[in-house]
Structures are given as C-alpha cells and as structure tokens.
Amino acid sequence: MGRFLIWLSGANREVLAKTPGESGKYEGLGGVVLTTAVMAALSAGLALHLALQAPIVVCVAIGLFWGLAIANLDRWLVGAFPRRDTVGKNFLQALPRLLMALLIGVVVSTPLVLRVFNNEIEKEIAAQHDVTRDQERRAIFARYQVGVWEKKVATDEAYLAAKDGNDQVVKDQPNVKAAARAAYQADQAYKRALDSGVRVEAASNERDARRRQYSAAVASAVTHLHTVGNQNIGADRQELERRRDGQAAALQESADTISRNKGLLMRVEALSSLRSKDSGVQATYLVLWAFITLVEVLPVLLKFLMTLGAPGPYEVALASYNQDQIKSAEQHIEHASKAREEELAARARLRTKQTELSAELGEQEMRRRLDRASQRTSGSTLFGP
Image (tube, rainbow, N blue to C red; front, side):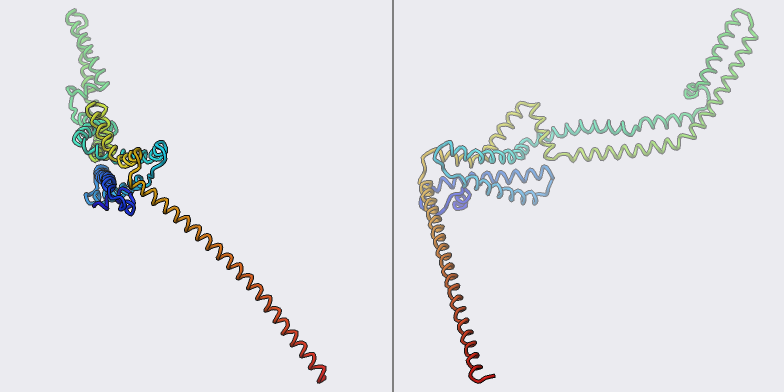
C-alpha cells in the first residue's frame, strides 16, 4: 500500500529510497490524492444515477473509471511541480494547477452536495411538479375546450327534449319571445278593457289571436329545435369524444413527462430554489461545497505549501539526481554527436577512396584496351591481309 501511495504522490521511488525519512510525507500526499480519487468516483456514480437513472453496475464501472482518471490527473498535477528559486515562481507555477483542481472540485462536489440535500430536493421537486402540472393542465384544457363542446352537446340534447313553451330553450327562441311579449301585452289590454268597460270584445279577440300566434310560435320553435338538434348532435358528440380522448392522452403524457423529470439539472434548479428561500440551506450548501472543493484542491495546495519551507532531503536528492540525469543526457548527446561526426568523416573518406579506386580502375582498363589495339595492329602488319 505504501508503494502505491508513493506512486500516487508522483515521487521518484529511486530517489526516495535514498531518503527513507521522507517516505511518510509522500505517502500522506499520495493518500490525499487517493481520497480525491475516491470522492470523484463516488461523485461520478451519483451523477449517473441522478441524471440517467443508470443501473448500479454501470454507475460503479464508470465511477471507477472516472476515479482512476482523476487520480492520474492529480498525480500529474502534483508530480510535475518542481521547486523553483522563489515563492513567486512557485506560486505562478501552482496557479494554473490550482485553477484546474478548483474546476475539478466544483464538478466533483455538485453531485455529492445534491445527495446530502436529497430529501429537501425531493420535496422541492414535488412542489415544482405540482405547479408545472397545474400549468400544463390549464394549457391542455384551453387547447381542447372540452367544456365548450359539452355545452354544445347539452344544447343539442335540450333541443331534442323540447316539448312546449314551458321549456327554457323554447322560451329563449326569438320568435317565441316576440309572440310571448305580444300575448302578454294583449292580455294586459284586455284587463284594462274589462276595468273600463270599453272595447271589451275587441280586446278579447286580440288576446285570443295573440295567444294563438304564441302557440303557433311555440310549435314552430319546437319543430325547428328538433331539426337542428338532430342535425348537430351526432357530429357534436363525435367531436366531444375525440376531444375528451385527446385531452386525457395529453394529460397522461404530461403527467408522465413531469414525473420523470428528476434529473441532475432539475435537482440543481431545485437546490437553487431552496437556497434562495432558506438562508440555513444556503449556509450549509456553501460550507459543504467549500469543504468538498477544498479536498479536491488539497493535493496541489499541499504541494505548493511544501515549497514554502526549506528543501527537504528528498528534494535535495531529487535536485542532485536531476542534475546527474541532465549531465548524463548531455554527455550522451555529446558522445552521440561525436560518434555522428566520426561516422560522417568515415563515410567521406570511404567515398574518397571509392572515387580514387574508380579512377585507378579506369586507367588500368584504358591501358589494357590500348595494349590489345596495339597487338592487333602489329599482327596485321606482320602477316598481311
């Protein structure tokens, strides 16, 4: 376990073996890196479970992968942090690493904080769902207008049920209203004629005529209402059923969608709403967020704080080791450069020898050809053609 923690700290085990008194310091630093990795793994698993409702096996697998990634990143942030000559240089070197660690801390802390406030967030989400559900219900009611079509069907049924002038729907017809008003006026005129004894018979005849007109208007209105009711009730009932079915389906779909909306973004919004309404939740949130984020920043922060004091034995040994490595690399490069120069010189000498040999071979070949030509010429002169 100690070797693993030292590996996580980014320390050089070969150098650390020469300064055994420093092992505890770097094991502790590796333990801090391990803590951040475990928190990151837990955070990733929770985030997947909250956002995607993923199975536990998937959450664990991806959480472990994320934890290893954060451990490797923190190890690099800590290991690639050599001591500089001044505090200012060390701070400038640490600043981008601290900013990166802070960003990681914010990402890692969010799911953990959401989990801590899970019960309060569930209540807030339920309240927000109720508000959203009411808004959606009103919008769906306004879109389908089932109540309007229920009134239309009820009106059609009232038309079909109309029988005489006692039915309100008959009384509301314009021609019936006009006939009723005329019959009432004629009846009042007849009563006045009886009281005065003047034109009683004429008033009686007028009253009877107006009553007959009223009865005819009622009969005409009943016939008309039955006709209109029969024409409209079938289509109106069909439209009402279609709108009822559509409204019920829309309400069910809306309810299902709202109930499933419990992902990571919804929880962040619910927590934000709780923080704005309750100062206690706000204070607790800030403390938790700062604590978890600080844990994530801690490896880099500790590495920076270690540069403020005097160099320890390990750092002195590491500086000497690095200098030796640099010298060895420079010697290797110089040796390789010299070997390269010697190789190039040898190749140049070889090319020169090859050129000289080629020239010599060319001269010898030329002499042989001249000798053969000379022999052929001498032979021809001696023996003739």
